[in-house]
Image 1: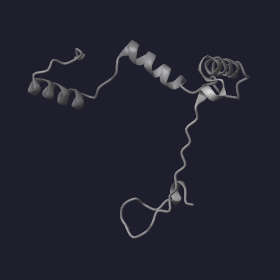
Image 2: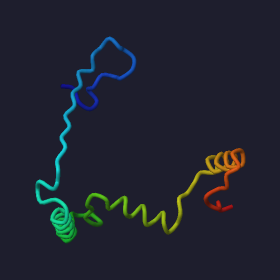
Image 3: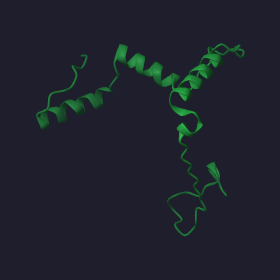
Image 4: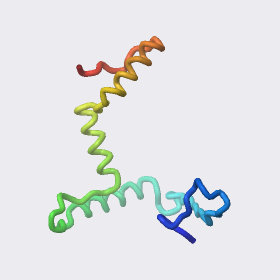
Length: 107
């Protein structure tokens, strides 16, 4: 079964079958101790991962969610930068629709 770059293009030769498959599995975490137990184990695993010796040049150990938490903290502190063209378009639509901007853009 093809994968990655070996999958035929989605558009173009519509006569060629893409020969794709899909497997989905739903797991109920409660069946494996889930809930509070799962949260406790995941937290313990993350703490242990973070105290491991770092590979040369590494700045730290990350666990799933770390980049998103850092981004959320930065955006909460500094705001989200909006390109001038998009800001102008938002202001135009705000005026057209008679809706106040939800924030005061920096000028």
